[in-house]
Length: 586
Figure 1 (tube, helix red, strand yellow):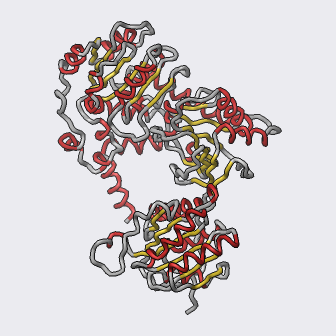
Figure 2 (cartoon, rainbow, N blue to C red):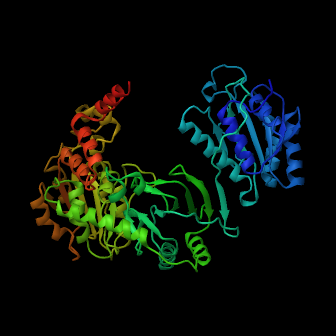
Figure 3 (tube, rainbow, N blue to C red):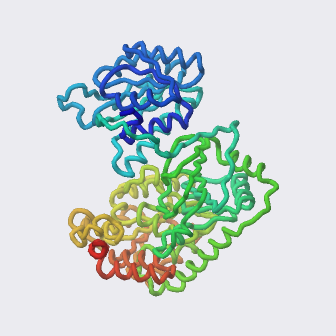
């Protein structure tokens, strides 16, 4: 039988990407664990393979080849202590910035420490032998394939970055005996573009700019992005924490998170990803993603990343605007999506009376009434989600702790910001679990009267009661209250607990349990007039109302087929619907 490529998919992906990144020189050391990789490359005429028995010598041999040829070199070894012998040569490569790819073959990392022969722990390499260390698992699922592709790209991109460096790839093997694969798979290549390098062409089709969280935009960057939108018929998709204030932005969740939103509307031929973490969970379907960020890191949020631009956003847009200066200007995509957004927003506004008293109702009833140039801090998840469907006045800056994305610290962050900017009004919207988690913060002696906290108290972690969450999909339903959704803690919606605590700490206290009472207090709460004390407005809602309100918001878009499907889901549940579909397919 003629030997071709190993049937191990991770080996195929590695070899395909070595070729795509123009890496063809290999120094192989003998062994059993690396047979699948070595046998595959030695039978591919594109590779130039050298043999070296001693791994210590092999690493230094690769240093000499890389320095002389000015190109990356792969070194491959087996399991056991073989990789330990690479350390001196990789140390040399690290300090000389030589692009060496150390591919150390291994059995499953689950076998580490189990008294299984020749299994070494390579999960924590020394700091000065490799710029990055990645693991390539056995590929069984699509998720495994994505992980493998991503990790190979991440490693190989570091080889030539910032003058170069060695990298480490820990390649798992199942010792597959099948070498019959004649064609390498088509696998995605991710490329990095630095400021002075040539830029790839903008593809034809629908172009979106996805803006994650931004602290602030300069006027020059906003102008450059708006000009890009005009020259390329693009649209900015943002959430509250994006803080985009330009001409061509759409609060994307209102459209793309509608149950009836079809794939055509969700699809973008190119999505330019700027900013940092987003808490919007925007349901968009890009074919290609370009990430633009000064850090130049690979962040494959949408699992479609093809380019990383290591440059600041302003330089990126100015470069492309200059190239496209002769283009005919068009904003038809923005106009189309804006019309859709306006229709949905008007429909939501017209149905506010039908919407239960809840986070979404409060957000829709409050956003437009916030004072100009105030600052809004939103807790994750339900508070941020509810405010991500509606436009917030452009003069208001919005922040959320989406970096670590944990329940803790939202009130503290808002208070910290308010202390150092006493001339501004700060609003914080937070649920009861997150508030009690951060309760000690409102006792801080530095608090000033410019902080106003809106506490939505539904007595439970509503997040775990939503129909799309695992607990509900699994049919756990009301049993979530005991230990998953944490019902009944912190006074179990006591009307007195927070009231007395806040008053004793010098806050002014307001409360509401229905729409009428909320609206009666709202003007005072959002007044631009400076108060004598900080304000805490505790609002009591019901978790079932919260769930139903979110469903209504996500069903503003009309589509008869999806309406029927969603109605069936709501009546019989998603698990039962799946069982029926499975039965009908038999």
